[in-house]
Length: 227
Ligand SMILES: [Zn+2]
Ligand SMILES: [Zn+2]
Image (cartoon, rainbow, N blue to C red; front, side, top):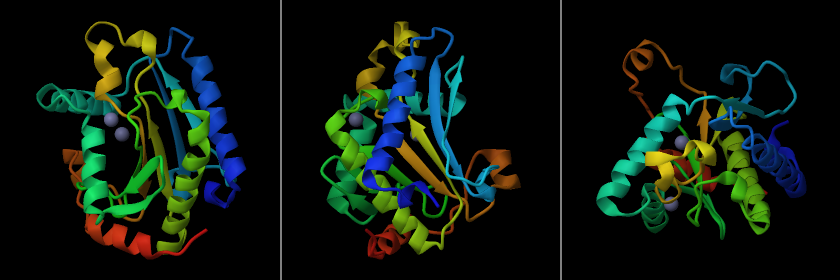
């Protein structure tokens, strides 16, 4: 059983728990970042069999998040626009990498996917902090999660995957040069199916070889009838 098998209300309840935990933990000045993730299946590192998510608050902003923040800032500095907003408008126009969309969220296989069938879910309206999500977007978020994960499950026969929620670092750590992160960064979810192995080349370089073009992955996922 995965989260996609729960009802819309149950999925929304899980997301509401994430929101309330983040809202509480961000008051603790020891923490700079709060990461929510899910490891589904053994290859993704899950050690207990029932569906579960994890939250880890860290005293520093993690390296991967910092890379995204810096990349988003570089883009903003020459375009004066959010890179995620631009990526999304290109994707929803081109359609070829779109997996699913509803009025508030776009689910797509990113142009430079690192893994076969990698999927990103991005809110259509710019927002840097996940925990500020409107109550009215909760149903749409449950819908996009359920549709996307059911498609993935059907397409790849229930693959193991990692699910990561990237939101901006907590507000009290955004002093000085990071004070403008609100307009530069855009929260999002990354889903990485574990169907190929991360091995010597990847560890040695930080580069990823992906045998499945995202256009093919998205086309296949779109065809999966779910719900
Ligand atoms: Zn944006
Ligand atoms: Zn990210």
